[in-house]
Length: 332
Image (cartoon, rainbow, N blue to C red; front, side):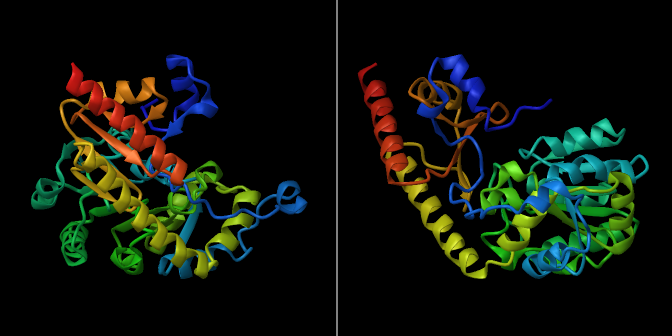
């Protein structure tokens, strides 16, 4: 199993701080969750049904011609590599490490490259896997450049796979609308924007033949009934979408300013997190953890990802802890 953020119980045990006393900034999940209503009993008691309207609502929300609900985009990440014969695969680095892991596990030849190098060398690969916006590097790509990369790959039967888990705050940059074209695959996560990571819900947008193959590979009931019920309402709540996007952008900008004011100038970021790349990352991660602030540490490159504080108290606490660290640094 690969390392991920959100391991709060492990941190609580390791540092001897009760879980409820932590400020957990280790994930990129929005702290502003969509308000989940009561779930009807039949959602728990009956098997999920594909004709409940969820797919139509999802296609409208994401702007995709066709979609398949899956148990989080992780389910698609693990399944897609098994739908191709052995291929040369280029994966963005740094990035969500499950992508490269899944393609290697399925027997493909995998190279991990920085974003620009990956796009420049796309002709060397059968499959290119990007994250847009990138996690944790924050890279953004021109939509025309991505479509040109797809055209180059598709001409020889290749795929462009774009993980848009953090795209919901900037939907105009999404490639979902173009996924009727063979070889363009977009992964969407409902957990990040809606703050519903525990629902393990996502969607894949692609051409019909690939969606049919993925559906056959995954089998029936890819998404449970309660999650389907919640998502039908969350994806349709347009007024909440507008408010949430504005709130995420404001909060992320505030976080960037706060980090910079303490000497941790973000290297990159997006609406869901800020990323600080520095050789001192491990020491800062440990110092924060000893005071009950959990960040996501990356070893290569040495860096920290800071998720969004969810309220004024969280911002004040992070400000105070970072101020303490700066004081300790001056005194040492």
